[in-house]
Amino acid sequence: MSLNLTLYGEQVRGNMMLKTQLFGSIYRFKDVKEVLAKANEEKSGDQLAGIGAQNTAERIAAKVVLSEMTLEDLRYNPVVPYEIDEVTRVNQDSVDSDTFQQIKSMTVGEFREFILKTDNSVLAQIRPGLTAEMVAGVTKLMSNLDLVYAAKKLPVVAACNTTIGEAGTLASRLQPNHPTDALEGVMASVMEGLSYGVGDAVIGLNPANDSIDSISDILKAFKEFVMKWEIPTQNCVLAHVTTQMEALQKGVPMDLMFQSLAGSQKSNEAFGINVKLLDEAYRLMQAKKSSTGANFMYFETGQGSELSSEGHAGADQVTMEARCYGLAKRYHPFLVNTVVGFIGPEYLYDGRQMIRAGLEDHFMGKLTGLPMGVDVCYTNHMKADQNDLENLAIILSGGDCNYFMGIPGGDDVMLMYQSTSYHDIAALRELTGKTPIKEFYERMVALGIMQAGRLTAQAGDPSIFTV
Image (tube, rainbow, N blue to C red; front, side, top):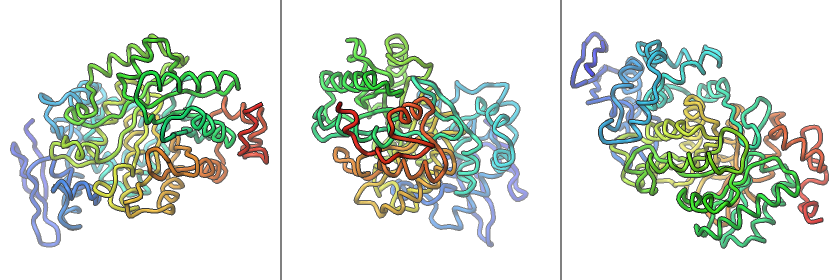
């Protein structure tokens, strides 16, 4: 593409030697990728990669240049070339040409204003014209409050056995992880979690053992339990997609199929996946799933994964994260969440960076059109603590995040990280006046666990599921 922009009176073309003047200094950027990287809010991952802004002034200069680029400029300058990367191809090939033509001349700064002042019905109509670079670009120009305000205007509803994302609901994934996948221990956590009204998004275990027999036993146990107790929810074991496919071929009941995603072909190869495999998994799940709705895939992402697998191609971690969402959209998922602080301080150094990343990811997922949740979490070697975690959860609740994790005591004994607890989910619902997913909530009321939107005195007693 031949770029034709006017920045502070100077026309730039072809090789895109973009520049601006700020406080008497001239700042030059060699291409769109560098502008995107240096316009990003401070992240330790970008500094580790050597691509972040050197100081605040350079960051502001990059934001100025970015704000005056058009959405067309971002469309035709993906951070990884189309010819060498299938994630780029998925993102680009999914663009609706008619929608893109309507918005292509808008600058990124104008796009920010458009999002903030436009209602959700109009915003939903422009989603098909977006690429990940456009989504990431506008995110870099937004404050934290902008990100929350805009995300709240972008509801996304999806249906598996139940329907997530409806107004007035805050869902939760019951995460009953166990260091050895011992079925008795796993099911004890399931019963405790349900007794607190947690698990309406999914009962989903991260397996310590990725064997077909082990994940099959757990999926069967989940399904048998929810059928016995008539719990409206979904089952899932977060094994590698190929293991799940083998279990599915053997007739194991599976409501949701899971896979971690990255924002580049190289990093997805490090996960042992590619688009062809995901397409095959989607078709198999479509034919053999045990769930009833049109949405039956579950994806997890997280800023920094591409850098950790040396697949970031010199791009910043926010832009790479947005590319994950462009890939996820291909499969019409029921659940997507960013595991925001899980990778560690090399990518998000402290609580401040973790909070910013969680707000960015939630907004970008919603703008892309995904039913977005967040694993509000941190690892113990990060400069973050429980207050940072709770701050982010409260802020995201204000932005209508679809769901959070529910973990015994907020301390995952298998993955060794801190996340939101069963009690946190209850407190956030009470604070915001939200309830679980409708069908699930009605069952919790029938079981005596919830009443009038709140937990009852009986809540927290898993023995109700042992009779």
